[in-house]
Amino acid sequence: VKHTNQSQVLYRIRQRSTKFFPIIEPILIKPKIPLDFKYLPLVESALTGFAVSPKGAVGYWQFMPETARELGLVVRPGHDERQNLIKSTHAACRYLRY
Image (tube, rainbow, N blue to C red):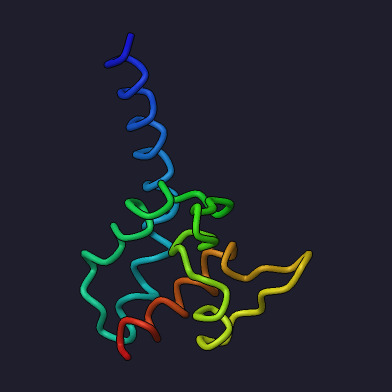
């Protein structure tokens, strides 16, 4: 049962990656970020925009609120761009280039 549950989780992550990687890759290419960085949100959030860490990092790339704001993302009650794949990926590129 344990291996079955793990296989199901990995299968769902693989399914999400087929949808999200084609969105992430072109955004990484423009600022010349190595494409291997597309795996970072997979590890950080399992490609789930609503992922929240125990310390308060949110979104695909797991940005803390202040870091997200410094990178130009809007973080306020009812509107959190850390949960937006495209905007947060652009912010991640800015962070990685920095």
